[in-house]
Each structure stands twice: as structure tokens, then as C-alpha cells.
Length: 146
Image (cartoon, helix red, strand yellow):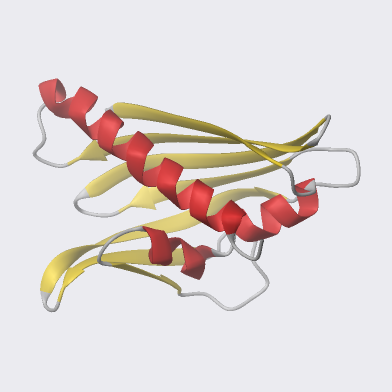
């Protein structure tokens, strides 16, 4: 399994930073050849499911996820979301935490990935690719609208 950690500062408020990071469909804008669809009706919370479809045409794979922890930030407290990956190819979890700091918000994205058929020696490469991909996603989501 590969552990990916991405940390970023945002000059935005905690609430706005959270709103941007949990706009699931927008994540696909920053992940090549990927479209994300929320498959359950609103409101978002524990039990909400989404699928990241990566591929071109009929060639690709689904990465189904379910939110198991949903704690939006409050005026003084941090926000935290946990998704469990439940696909045939990609397994693991992702946690997004947003907390205030002296000049905006601090983001911490942690993700543990396992890819079926990828042996353990491939984990460092998978972790490096994950840091790049998820870092790009966080950067793009936080940059929007500025």
C-alpha cells in the first residue's frame, strides 16, 4: 500500500476552502481522463457515494468511493471527510482535513492506495504519482475563482 500526504496553505477561509475541496465533480477537471459522478442524492454526508471513471471511451476503470466520515468545519473547528475506496482495481481510503491557521486555512489530504496486481515494490512509484496528482487537484481547486 502507498501512503500519500499532500499539505497546502490556502489564503481562503476554512469554509470556502472546504467547499472547494468537497466539490467532487470538479476534481475530475484536474485528473486527466477522469470524470467524477456523485451517485446518491443530496445532501452530502456519510453514505454518499461517488465514482471516478478514468479512461478513454470504453477503455478504463471505475474507482467507487463512499463517504464514511463527514464533519464540515464550524466557525472554530476543523472539517474532516473520509472516503473509503471500494473498487475492484483501486482500494484504500482518503481523508481531507481543513483547519484554520493564522492567515487562512491549512489543508491536509492523506490517502492510502492499493492497486490490485501492483506488487509492494511499486508502492513508492504509486505514492509519488499520487502526491503529484492529488497535489495538482488541491492546487487547482483552491486556485479557482481567484
